[in-house]
Structures are given as structure tokens and as C-alpha cells.
Length: 294
Image (tube, rainbow, N blue to C red):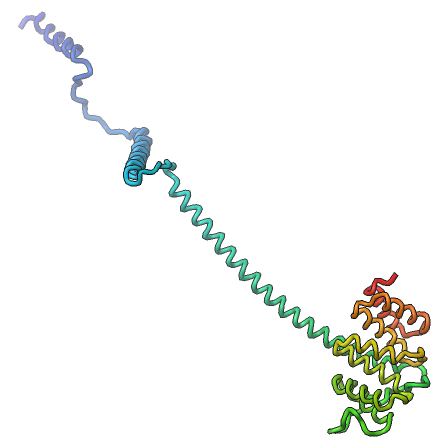
């Protein structure tokens, strides 16, 4: 083979390769493989394309089976719905816990209200008993009550003794007072009513009406109590219990929503009993506020 023919063959081979172009490529030489950074992105693209295809298939089959228009939702709708469902479940749990706390608080509030009502009733009864004792403080007075130790104070009615009495005015009065000071207001009310019926002309009748009014206030019979207090203060007695009787009359009138008459009564209290005990004056001030006296 001549030198010219030896160089002609490679040239012809190169020309043939150029003519074939990209349709032919020589075998690649063995080399070390390297990771392509585009592989991950390509995988995600393929995954999204597959998801879109699945959604399109679902849309096509849904439209074919139902014949209704199909609303195309984003691919993440299921996830959002699941997240919303979880949030609603959490909210329901919170509301359930709050409702339980409200029910517990309401129950405790009802119990506290009942306890306060019971305490208020006890305080009212105690206030009445204190006012009863206060009526006997100060200098001795005449015409209706005694100073010093209250009649019948600390005395316990004899077993089987009736409220209507049967003895003299003083014995019946002491018996009724003993019932009241022992806290038996129902029996005391009956005893004082019996006294006023049996001993209406006694010099103890006015005071008996005063204590009768007290027992009626405890029972909440404001109209009857007002009548008893009016009978007690008729003539404006100068007894230790008289200022309290006038005050109690005003309070009964307030309970009956007779505020103008209550204010007039409180005015008479200040005018006729300027030296009343400080406790009477303090309660009278509260009564004026309650009656909205000018």
C-alpha cells in the first residue's frame, strides 16, 4: 500500500462520519459516572405530571358518570381539607372544655348564692335580736316598757305553756318576749297577737304591738307589720323602743312601695326623736337612700 493510499483511508472514514452526523456516534469511552443535578428536578416534574394525569382521568370519569359539570380543584385540596378538619376538631375540643368550665362555674355560683341567702337570713335575724336588746339600753323610761334588763330576757317558757297566756298582762308579755328572744318567731307572733287581743288596755299594749311588728317583719308580712308599728307609735311614745318602731314602720312602707309615706315617717323620726341611738340614725340614713327621699 502506497503512502497516499495509506492516508486516503482515514480521510475517507472521517468524511463518512461527518456525512452521517448525529445519527451515528462512536462508542463512548468508559468513564466514571457523575450525578446530574437536574435528575431531582426531573423526578419532581414527572411526579407532578403523573398527578395531573390522575386528576384529569378522575375528572373525565366523573363527568362521564354523572353528567354534571366538574369543578377542577388544585392538587393540594385534599391536604387543605384534612388540615381544616384537624383545626375544627381542635376547636371543638376547646369549646367542650370551655363549656365544662362554664357549667362548673355556674354550679359554684349557684351554691355561693344559696349560701349568701342563708347567711343574709341569719344576719337579718341577728340584727332583729340586737335591735331588740338595743331598745332597752339607756335611761329608764316610763309608760310602756322597763329600762335595764328586758322583761323575760333569758327566760324559757315553761313546757306546754300556751301563747295565749292565761295569767296577768306582765306574765303574758314576758312569755311572748321569751319566745321571741329564743328565736321562735312564729310562737312569739301568736303570743303577742293574743296579748293585744286580751290586754288591749294594758300599758304594755303599745310595746306588744312593737314586738308583734318585729315578728311579722321576719315572716315578710309587711302590710300587717306596718299596722302593728302604727299601733305601737300612736301618740308618739317616749320609750326606748319608739325610735326603732318608727324606723321599722318606714322600712315596711318601703317594702310596700309606699316611698312618699316612708320619707314622711323618716322625717318624723328625725323631728320627734333627735336623740335616737347612732345605730337608729345610721339605718334611717340607709332607708332614706333606699326610698329616694329628697
